[in-house]
Image (cartoon, rainbow, N blue to C red; front, side, top):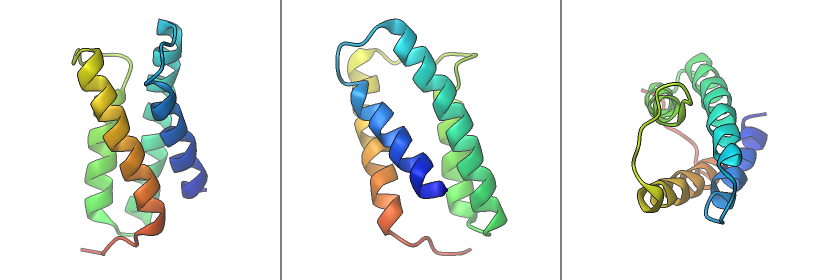
Length: 97
């Protein structure tokens, strides 16, 4: 299930690079909030503390209630980095702390 969530989130973030309507970005924020919360919960259940911290931080960054204004260019960079990180995390086994 985690792999599917990561792939969906990565695709959504990569699509953010295109000229999309504002509503799309709102949907991405909400889906990211739910997706990262699920990933954080699953990582906690598996004992991956480092992943829990990362996913909680990403949940806070992408949450749609108190928006963090970074500007379009910075958000594009964040989207690419997070998307690549999600894809990479599918193939990399986390270390348990």
